[in-house]
Length: 140
Image 1 (tube, one colour):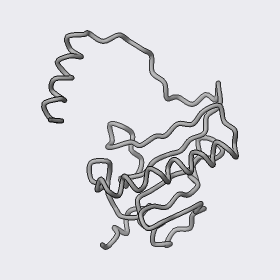
Image 2 (cartoon, helix red, strand yellow):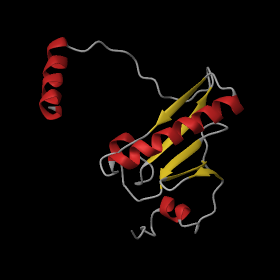
Image 3 (cartoon, rainbow, N blue to C red):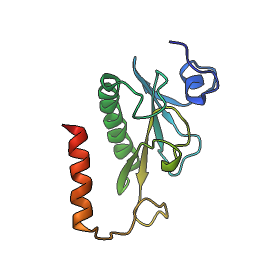
């Protein structure tokens, strides 16, 4: 499959753009983010161009997730953070920065100033139940 040359991550896969590769296999590459939000910020990308979670084949996703776990374990062992965020965004509304499937592994420390948490606001139970039913209908 030809990779889109305009895609920065495809250019990393083809080695046309240098990167700090940590590990790779036939499905993915893990490398250091060059715009890290914290020391040890790593990206794991699919080697095959898929724009987001909706486009990536399920078997490929199943093979990538153990690599995400291995990288998270390594980041945890090396940087000893208070926690780790795994972030995978899809589309502009979710602030997806590159339209190529990728997972961020971000080590976190208490009071690091990074946003991720949102305030808890109880939802209306009838609206939650109605939304659950809509989703169940699609998942059946």
